[in-house]
Image (cartoon, rainbow, N blue to C red; front, side, top):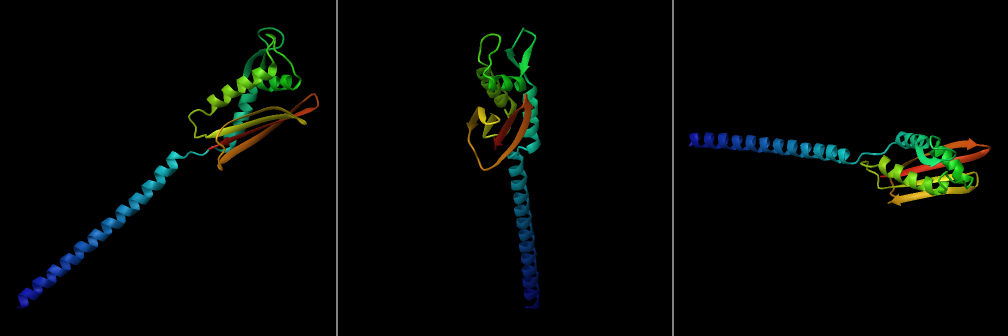
Length: 166
């Protein structure tokens, strides 16, 4: 009888050890799943940073356009084209400077943010009290980063704002 009781106790201890081992394995598996879900979630949503928006504005202001004022090698930058548009100027080929500015900015924004997690954007350009241009496309979400750039030419203050929604 004593032998049966000893075997039963050993069997009971073995079952407890197996149950403990199984519980440890389940806890480790759950911890791994939580860790993986956080790491995968962060990798998929890559935020846009403020400095990226600021650098984007700085870069597109220096971009050379297809608009020339005098002769072929004298193409205007976006910054100079904004001033021309504000003054209702035209390019050498008789195109409206505002039409050229709008087409160039649409292309720059689309190519500049291609492959980024941007859902939409809004670009506004104002000179003192008048709106020069306002472009927007896509969805406006609660998550966004924006920047503003100012410059002046001949006493006229020009403000540029760009907001990227992600």
